Image 1 (cartoon, one colour):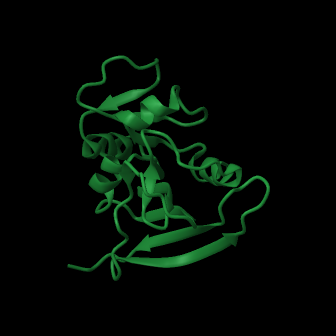
Image 2 (cartoon, helix red, strand yellow; image 1 turned 30 degrees about the vertical axis):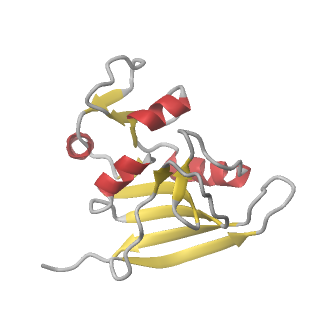
Image 3 (cartoon, one colour; image 1 turned 135 degrees about the vertical axis):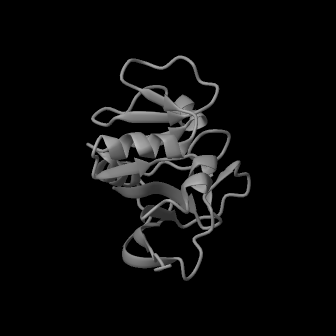
Length: 168
């Protein structure tokens, strides 16, 4: 099963400010939908709360030791490894990890692919961050640049990173 992470991060790796996205980028939302639709999505409790509802067309999984009430059809696991074991047993081809910062940090060593929207700005008041992509552990295999325009306040680049697995 391929473990993918989908993230939008500023140049200084900020992904959120007070549990909200620090930008409005409609094309990034389309990219997110394209990469996640039809796949199980794993998120942390704060990401779940910020969404306010289950994402349609996807199996929604929340990682939390304290969350008790979720709508029917949403699954809760206390650890990301438990969720991945469950999905492997269900024979899913791919799972998308969608945030937030603590979940990305916990899953970085488990991921095979990162679908990143690199937002070309610096956010100084960030409260959630994406881990640094370590050179030598990840390879950039595709990117597509987009300029700022009347719908997008910042320029951004879609990227696909693949983990460089070592044979041990």
